[in-house]
Length: 600
Image (cartoon, rainbow, N blue to C red; front, side, top):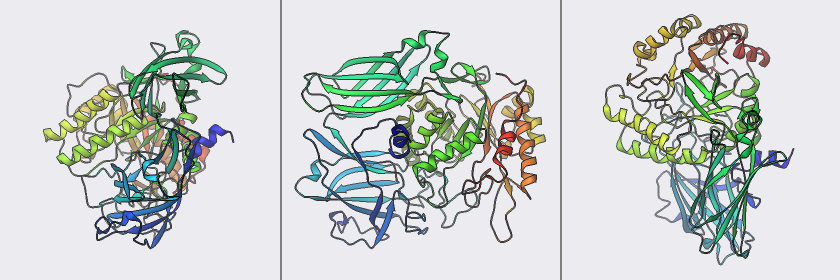
């Protein structure tokens, strides 16, 4: 395995990599605080004994954590001791958390170093000053995750004690990697890549740890294999910098296709960034990144990739493992998940009600699988819900904006959290507001205001329809039938368009259908949108469904429900252990079929 692949498997932040880092996963001290007395008793000082051990980053509800307690526990405490890192002169120690569900407070040696709210997004703390004076250091984390708080973005984590319907076990506390990184005092904190194919350029937004106090240069080098695409050096005066990078090879209209990222040819551009004092004296920050040269959008009822119509064959992915819940069992498991999506014949994945681990998106980037990013839903509409959704969604957009695989944003799903959107203007304003907010932050991707139905304004008209093959073909086979569905259809009893004046010839995508479940064995639970009795019947029904949807040339794409079984929701093409329910090659043929005569 090459070093690049090792980094993608192990390093928690694939698009901003450094050499000096330490994985803090593994065994931590752990304790529940059901009476919520820990703050008053100052558990952060390290004197209160914790009676359990947990394996981080697996949630305590899961088997791999070593706890496997699926009862209600609002407050969780973690503690770990680390040795003093060998800090070179002019360097700082940064403590990073991939995600802690839901609200986290962090102390080092009893000193508060970070607080963060939002269960699906990363945060960091500079812990250097808290390390002074002692040889060993105690990291303490308090996580608050209230299963009864319906204003909290939670996705499909059940608010009931036992999973029911389409909801599954909770994922509380630390559930993505924790790591320590040594960085120069002045360092690159974040970056966002935005390619502009028409202009033959790449825009880079860089955030620094602070404003430079002396003249500082940022050098950026872009390469693909052994080819140098661009190299620039700019003066940086503030804590943010915008770097406009011309890529001359993109200007050659007959040659540029070899550079473009797309499924089947996921070309990636390697990037090296060096931040250094102009005087040559002082610490230099070197980070490694990558990007993909691609565009996405829509026109004339078609989804566009790199300016050309592209038919979406997607599958719904919930990213849930029976042994570790929303946390991936390993980096290798994330890679295998994307490989399976590709091997099944899908060219895209709709990540559902989860902000997936960045390493999953990195494998989508590397293997050429498109992805939709979707915000986990809350379930009660209120001003508090609006604030929680908005603040965390902005963090999601900032974290994932550089991934070439991500080609659409979905802030709401099936009116969850906005249950009366059809009749209540304030809920309509939230959906439209999230659409416009997303476009303001990232105008390069299509945005779906409310996936499934009851759209306000959207760049893609997406529908969820679990009808049989004959009904799907009748509803979507002709432009007239599709127009009737958009304006008068009520799948699941819901209107599709709330604003019929928003007509920009948006693509129509069947973003959920299928949901076939093998009938469970006697004594076992199983749920799906429709039951079949055998593998042979499953394959026959799948062929019929996919053929019907593919024959509807009015559709710009589809998303099948779903990739894997998820607890009692047993409508996956794969079982919970990722084994195909019928031979994989037969599943692939059913998905891809014969697309002769379709638009290119």
